[in-house]
Length: 431
Image: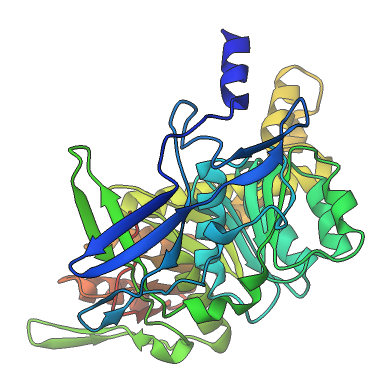
């Protein structure tokens, strides 16, 4: 059975999807061309022309299509035009090292990383995505620092992930990447000497996407988002637009309830506004219901896809603690937290080593002291805010609009020290 499973994951499936696809919107037609690449076979080295390796799982045929013709306008919305391909336009030349034939997950991970990265172009940044959700996002003074911060934000989840960069890959960053295991690395270009370092991982997919450096042009571009239902039906929607382009677009939390006006007591500092903006930008690429924590231009804890808001706020706190403890353990002892715990259980390491890590993690509250909390939807009750305030957060970003916004404002004003809060005026659900 084990050999069968391994063979299943190595299989490159044939697909029976057409070479061209057209979608009609009334009298307007969009034309799509199926993307395929000539890539050497894993074993024989023979060139095989094939599209996607498989879909989300082995056994699911899949195909990638690029928009090649059609200029869709519906109402007052003009959708993205042909000639703007990113992931759908990757060629053999862009696959500097193909590793294994790409599958759907590899490409959708790159796509969602770009969906976040399009807001993060002011400085060197790294976005690491796993299963279509970011596990670490960070700015840095250099690309290498950005990668280190993003990786250490959740070193465990980053294993086998997809890392996308907004600056050309340099040697220092490539050397750091080579110490870890990733499935995909994408950048606008790769400087001399970086490819041999990255290629030490034979299965690593090294992809050049030259348009990364002009991603800001995609911020206001809408595409048609199509969701297929199990009965064969479709839900079609416009892709969302993020109205928060700068800190000036936030509104200080304020509401009225039963004739009384409630206003946030403390305005954010410039540093807090910077993290608020960064956090809301990262939030655009996270599966809802979500709450995340960010600090100093890096993610601290990411909670995704939960059914209740206080629950996801607590899960993100738990993740912040566990990732912080693991980072301390790895940096100090060269071991993951769980490995050190197992060695202590076996009597191979002193118990005090782990106790010291746990104590420091508790004292630092998992790195949450001074962090900013970001929620993709409003808080229906103040409990979600309260659990974060107890961890020492300094600021909150949320859409606003709850009937109980006044309670969340009260919670921030009652905190010691007081917590600032801003509204975005829009939510950021992503399903």
